[in-house]
Amino acid sequence: MKHPTFDRPKKTTGWPLWPFLLFILLMSACKFNPNIQDEGAPFLQGSWTETQVDQQDSLLRYQQHDFRFNCDSVYIKIRTHAKMKMEADSCYGDGEWTEYARGIYIVRNDSLFIEATYTHDNWKQKLSGCHHIGQYLPRFAITSQGEDSLELQNFYSKLPIRLARTAQSNCIPKQIY
View 1: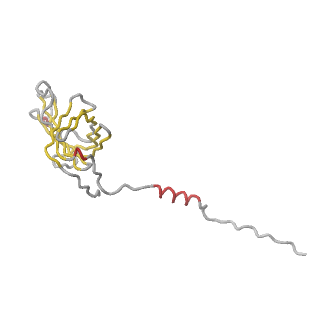
View 2 (view 1 turned 135 degrees about the vertical axis):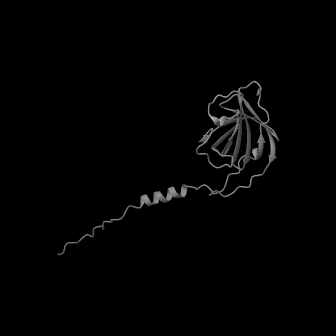
View 3 (view 1 turned 120 degrees about the vertical axis):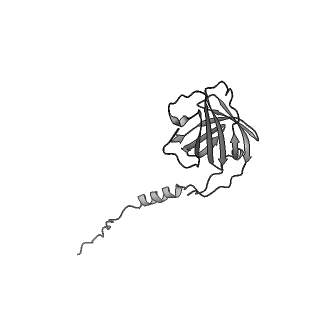
């Protein structure tokens, strides 16, 4: 009489299937950001200028701002006026100088957040030279807004920034490289 033989299951030497399925599941849950510029806040689109600063005649130093909002991008021109020379550096000349910054912005509820970098007047990044270098990260509360007027309150300063619209524009999103 012959003994029955049992076929044993063959061992598999490959990887288990579950890590592959987990990888597929995770990859299907991811969504890549589009390579197109965001539209930004429609009420901000265009150019804005600060013509007068509250109590500027009594301040030793004050700044006037120009903002240009284009889709989700912002270009900022900051003109500083100093009545007293507080720096010994020749960069500050006769007490008036201009700085530039370029970056992106986001509006959340009544707040305007800007993430920008100081640039030269041609909007190319500034790596050395006079005045500020690096990031420009102001945070503003939008205290008042009208069709052609905007008032911002800097979270780091108590002086309001009253802006008048000088040009209107519409956002046409561009491809991001």
